[in-house]
Image: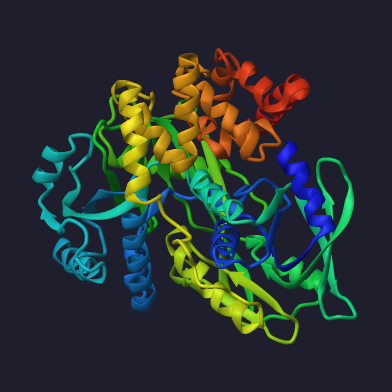
Length: 539
């Protein structure tokens, strides 16, 4: 909280080259890319970072094989290229995973045609992953006995990638990278409008959602990265654009782990859309829906739940069918899809493009980012730098890459010390990995002071929150560096505990209240109560 307050004071006192409104994936990569080029950049979000759409993904980093069906080959090519770069640059976080796709007798796609599609997709991916394979129904059953193959005509196995951690954590690490390079950022700071002053600089009126303090932020350029709320903010600031958003609701259900094998099971649901079971630590994430909605604010309906449960029960041979009582947590959000103003969403909503659009107003020094996907994030970051440069902001050459894990020298030194402390022999918890690997994956070079703390006091390597694998040294780092304002920020976004454990189980977890005391000091009790009151109201 001290760091956040210091940043708010700097936001009010300073003038910036660029102000980014929105701390989802688009805003986070824009900040990281610009800060690495010595741009004086600030970022605010009305919620927590990654507090809306960017925390509700499938955790997949995929090249978009489904977009081949709508002939968006350029989009698939760009996504595959970005996926490969993410695999290369984040080897501890972004990992290749096999997809096992089962086709039913009433499928509109025969297995041989699906195989051709996956081979073309593999070539778009520059052959960087394992090759696709055609599988008979019997072979599918032998590889994954959980699948019901009674109505199957076979399928294919191919590779894509997924996040070993959660999407919101991945986004925050770009925020952290931006802060490391001088970006001034604060969550729970809401823009309530912006206008141009006599010098043609932007003056953005903002409100601290915690203290209700109002102040102004001055900048040469505004980047509207507010995701689903871009249109309303542009309207509020008098910025006209060619594009707008329409919204597709997607939901996922988190249930106890269904398969012990680390792979994604893919099917075509009853309505023809792709449907997945995805590993998530020691749980399984199932979904998703793709439903047109009018507004960004949404929730999981009874119909959504029934759709996901009925589809998964029909496609898996489960000892006992999944019921609503088996759901540990739910994820829901909207995908903002970019369309030109005046154009309708189309009769087939599922075939709408998922591409991103960067629209720049040279006259107003304003940039809007429409659409976008987690996989596409590196492309967005580079494109934003090009657009900001065209608006007259000086960008210096990048000294070090603005994304990815630290270089081999830093990594080698870290693991050498982790091994010396015996952390290469300690299982971290729900992921089954070693503690040294887990700390590196989540914090990279910021895990080095954690090793120092463990070396000084071995108790800092002890588990703090029962059943989570979270160590005491992590909470100290989070409290000082990660701008955690509410307990939900930690449980839902800096970690994924709230996805893996029900609120009732969490409430009785040993060490959670102690973690609150480290994070919030004298406000610990109030923050603890606030979280569980909200959790109960949502359920």
